[in-house]
Image 1 (tube, rainbow, N blue to C red):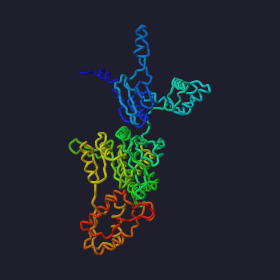
Image 2 (image 1 turned 90 degrees about the vertical axis):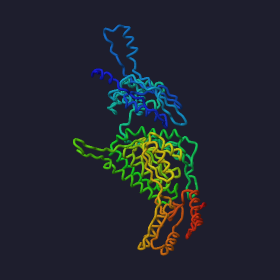
Image 3 (image 1 turned 90 degrees about the horizontal axis):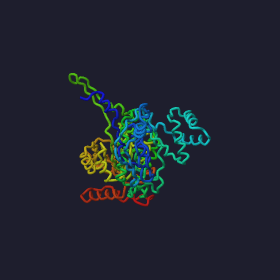
Image 4 (image 1 turned 30 degrees about the vertical axis):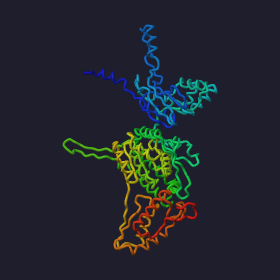
Length: 575
């Protein structure tokens, strides 16, 4: 049997883990990831070698903490020399984290993961806690040029920052770098972790290159950054009313998809431990920002999808109801407790987030369906990968910008674009625990089968067939208005569009009036104020609809109103 002393001795140096490998958008994000992980483990990371454009090598050390510095009085000179060489130097870890840039992304690998020292017990001892801010570096430079000594400089810095734990030695080190002309911000950037999971990341988002393109290229959102994809393949997003290219959607590369999943996986532990009340506050702010920008969202939906502005506003408002529901999610997160279900046995249940979740969206409701998915998922403590429709992704990206502005931390929400390849990647990735899908039957069946084979939870909302039954005593005007709105709203491009009407007692009293109401519908571009019916999303969809109508006629259907050749004079192309 092992005695207590032996157990204590074995546990004196708990095992510390190297940072997990992953894919990152840029060099600073990679270094931040390694530094944050190191702080959680109680060790220090330093940049050992850096070729900024291609490679960065990071090593683990103990941050200047020496061992065996006191020399016993009875120790010989040779023994002191040996101990000085072996015990008084920095207690380094031999592991190395190597980041290499490949196809525009940084891939982190670990050379080895062996540690030979104990973790820092007090995080205030961590060198990152003693680092200077960018402003303090500038002040050190100015005070050095004014002739102040390091202790005097430190005293003045502490007047503004009483919590500063730096020593005169650290000021000397900064002064040495300044003398060498090494005065860039990144050399003094702290690796300290964020104090709170909730912060305004919107201010940290720089103006990306995709906004400067003409037409603009829709960005991915990876780890809190809106970044232009490295993919050379794009899909044009057309305005259905004018056929003009208003943006381009990249087919996200596999490496970028892995980077998005890794960012979500990395953000999950901190986010799941964020109090539900804090997550709710972000949703309250998100709700406020959607109200603020609802005009921009509706205009974008109309430009990309073609539905009228009235329908576009309804699209956003329906989704906003889900955000409002997320604002009150705290009570729904409560578990259950039942005492004494059997002699001496109590039972309880708790609700826990799953981890990384994903959503695959159709084109018919560009705002509502993304808002069905990620607000509820992230408020419950999950992180999220959203794939908008490649036909109208603009609203989803705008909503993501608002979510970041509302305070959603980096990596909690990520956006990737693409078609079949990205859908397959979402289904196959082992780090994604659940998928929500809305779309046609064939796609839903495929996604359900492929993802469930990987053990994922699937929420598959697939095609609908909607019927109306009109009774003989129905109100004529109210019924006609309801039938026209349900059948022609959003040009019929919605899962709840009315496709079949059954008239109990016969069609004759209704047919002429129904045709009259349909003729009164004003067909125009969705942005026109008097438009009741806008264009369908693409010429291909219109051709398919015309073929279906002709098939019905060929098989004996009676065509009482033909709208296949309608031309809107204000626009060159037919709507």
